[in-house]
Image (tube, rainbow, N blue to C red):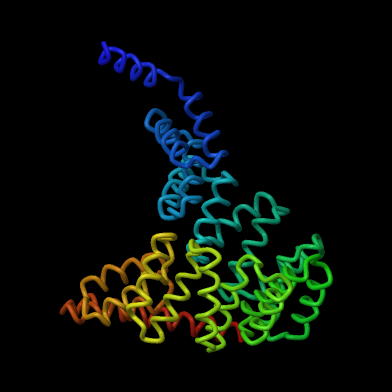
Length: 365
């Protein structure tokens, strides 16, 4: 009797209309029940593989659960069915942005802007990518337009300040930051955004002071200790940076970025046994941080485990194919294993990437 009831229930579930399954999955996604949402959207796709709504929402599930590689795969699959879908383009761009793959994100945000020239989110993200890729003049052009249209937007002002610092125009940068401080209501938020502008503009001493001001105004300002720790690393104040990152993790043990920066700092200070647990925790929280695999690869090299190092460093190069450092370490690991031809190919990639960067610097000058 029980077996018959179970079969009946299974038959009813199988016969359930996909519209109902989709709607229930969407409600689960809105409620933050990602397991139920994933199960529902997967079930829809088993029945309707070309259902763009289910693909797009499954991508959202993966993105919100830090499975960025899977999210990218799903969004690519959806875009093959609907290449001009603005929501899919924007969401895939955000995934690539979170993975620090700015060169891949830029054309996606650019396509959104072509369709919707006033899309502020896409414009701001496009400018941020251009800034991170060294295309400073293009970033300033977009940001000045956004500044004129949205003069109260603190995020735009912080990015514009950073861009002017990068362009070696400190007076313009300071004017923008003064405007930022006058327009952002919270003193802590104003100082925090100014600190980010100084940091992105590679003015680390000023960034340190601004983040300290933010924490003085609001001791538990979200991200304050983490960002101060990052600035202190760049300012070569290692002991204080370690303390600030420890405070960040005491406030939020799930801060993947704080674990990553603390692990990297401890690696640089040759404290391998302390560094690796933080790097592993960062990898668990965000498996698409390329730098985590880079540092873990270096740790495996120092532990004379070249096979494990290759596995980590290959992952780093896949996530960040335009960064020479992991290719160099990969070459070292491959040589230790006697894989000379592969090591030479990795070194050639290092030379190519360094030559590209040198060419970009010459063009910028």
